[in-house]
Image (cartoon, rainbow, N blue to C red; front, side):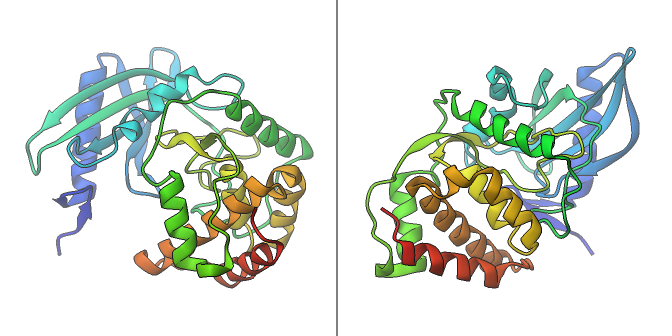
Length: 291
């Protein structure tokens, strides 16, 4: 049976398509690049990656398709643009190859050669399912990293992080119970910050396709909401980001993230453990009022 995947057009045998793109990236970024071990398709299935050797160094090769006519250009350039961010433990893109293919569908493809991160992601998916085995210093580093990111000015905007989209989301999920006033505060955030995009025991924040301007506290809210199924972790996230999460912007961000996660579950049919917790969180936040 054939398998398909939506990039924004349907690609038959999507995983085979990604593996072929990876082989082409090795050819284009070589000579002297040798693949090490098996390739890994990302949790989101937006990309495929593998360890490679170039000379004496071990690097990571990430390959992703892009439909220029239908997908957001900011996501297409996110990893390279993130090279300008300092003070955040993250991969650096050292080389990039871009090419176009017409088969099986017309799309562009990018191969990005970047820092290899030896530490594994905290969780296999977006949601954390067990306590995080990380020292106190790890949590301090995480806090510091998001503070440094917030200080980085970003001329990067996405259609789902606008005042209009936020108002629409809040209205759809919470109705008149939420005051649809202005977004309390904006700042630079990692817009895909979940437990598969942070590593431990060494802290690295990965997957920088999606970063830019959002409601302040969006990243912390994302980690918190996707940890509600493990109270010990949720408590630690809240302690680490208490001033952010308990601020008007932070409460607003939590309502946005909760609505997004519930919407994602409904649309994609994925199991999300803390659904009940998300509803309870939203009720508490609504009682406090977002102003």
